[in-house]
Image (cartoon, rainbow, N blue to C red; front, side, top):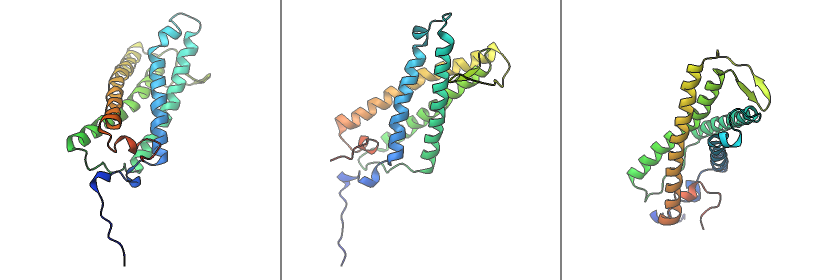
Length: 193
């Protein structure tokens, strides 16, 4: 005769209610790379001021890392679309679930728009893109006005993205340190004790 198993709602985050290793690795790898790339972007003028010999190489390094990061983001998005996220802990309210879903959608939108707008803008500039020293053929004409539009989108998205990342980190810390619920452990490497 089989045993009757009663599930305790307080333990709603079972091993099955966690993200898989690939999703966890992509989350933390891309998160760290994005923070580094955004910081790099905001510090470009300090690292290599305009008019200095190092400027072009520094900008192209930023563009090269951006292309690699964009490819990783596409891999992550495809993985996410093919793999359902784990179930929410039962204790999480509906407004928290809805807020989380919308903030994640906005984070993904920024992850796509920021590198895409930087790449598009570069194709309308006279400098183009050099991918780790290899010149990629520009497909757009030199157009300062189109460059300004895409560069503006790139910069505005970076500031919006920083705000969303701050909210994301604050919410994660709240769940991990204050609520001590199962939300943070869903995406952390170690399983909760």
